[in-house]
Length: 274
Image (cartoon, rainbow, N blue to C red; front, side, top):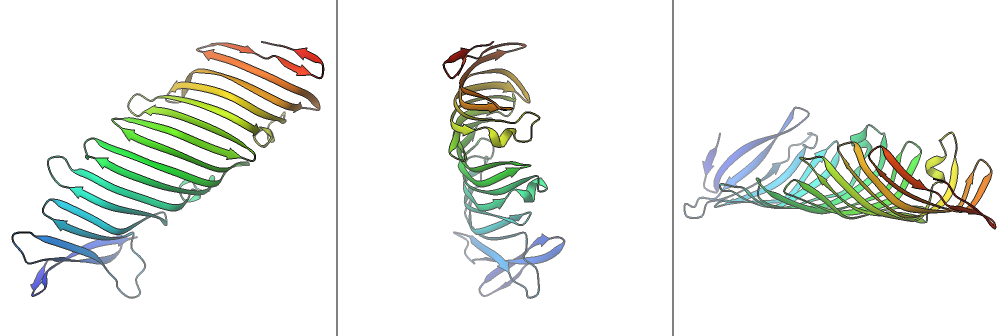
């Protein structure tokens, strides 16, 4: 329904949160040559906030979205930008989530805060997405990552992780990778720098402590790993009271036949295994 007056035409739009309606007021300017429209939520007293707030401007075949705020599980996401209407919808949008609590989406299994910046370009048929993610104090069960960050992009069915870093204590893991959405194939190449394994083995039947450095490469499809190779050096290894000064693990696992070599040192002595 619409009613017209001297200032233009007002069109009510319904936005709901938990089946509680609110209204958005939209004004269309009275011009035939360059029709324009703008709208924003109209506040009502004693009503809870809606799922979103958004201001939209229409001009010719262009939609401008500004000052928008969307709420998913009470976590705020802002989306602003341009949408060009045509045979293929053109996209030029930016999405920002300053601090999203992971427990709101994982039933408290994973906790921590994540912030993200995402740009969406291209068209609705063939979009291009790029962005960055940062996180603080991610915890799962008794495992914790102090912080992390990554830059990523998506185009033509492929997700690329250009660089990702995880920081644990004084150590870090850096990686890059690729994932094909249609094929399910993935690859990851990474390096490990001064990572302490004790926090990740404390709940195992044989806890161990060790400072790890090295590099690794993983390839697979869906949930299956098809190849795993790398060179890892551990120093100050301690397992069940047995201390090893250093050990190097070289592994190349392709299919069902692993190839693993483990040379090490204890004081002035040497050990090896495969």
